[in-house]
Amino acid sequence: MKIRHAAHLFAALASVLLLASCSSSDGDDRRVTEGRDWHWDKEAGAAEASAFMNVAVPKDATQSKGAVQINPQENIYLLSFVTNEKNAESIAEDLRSEEPLKVKTKDFAPEGERFGYLGLAEPQTLEGARWTGVCPPCVKDDRRKKVQWIDIYVQTLKADQARVYLQAF
Image 1 (cartoon, rainbow, N blue to C red):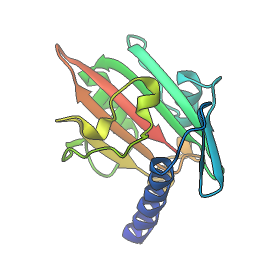
Image 2: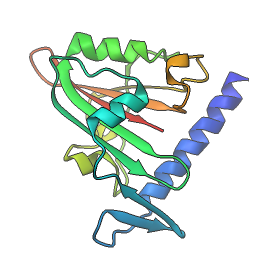
Image 3: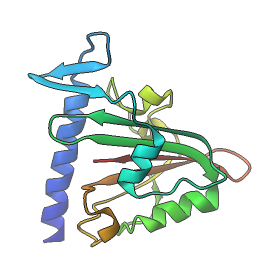
Image 4: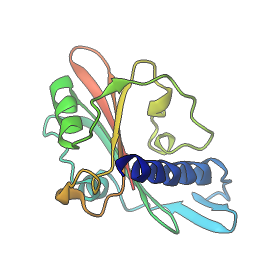
């Protein structure tokens, strides 16, 4: 049962990524793909993304950035910040994924990926970045009932510092 549900969630995620990768700009951060319109919410940032995901940005974090992409069916929330390695791993554990953070084979992001909007590299293109994902309703995480999926990437920087990338819908 879990495998079938996970397969449906991965199919939905792939559809969202395909929608984003096939878009074209008209100059004001609005994209139209197959008759559908999406845009960046210019007034939303890290606070809105953090609240949606119910993820607290650590007090000592720096370079905190966030954004919300408004889509016809479901919005995409992005959050990134730099913190110490222990905090980064703690955030990943708090998501209650059935899989721990693990190094993922480096992928190449399709043109138009999301974190570029924040001036950051796409996390799936970073050598050695660790990843895990979770469906909060599937793991009965009542704190995140309205979140269908969260991806977390942790990129080790230097001197016990790591950049955390979170994407949710």
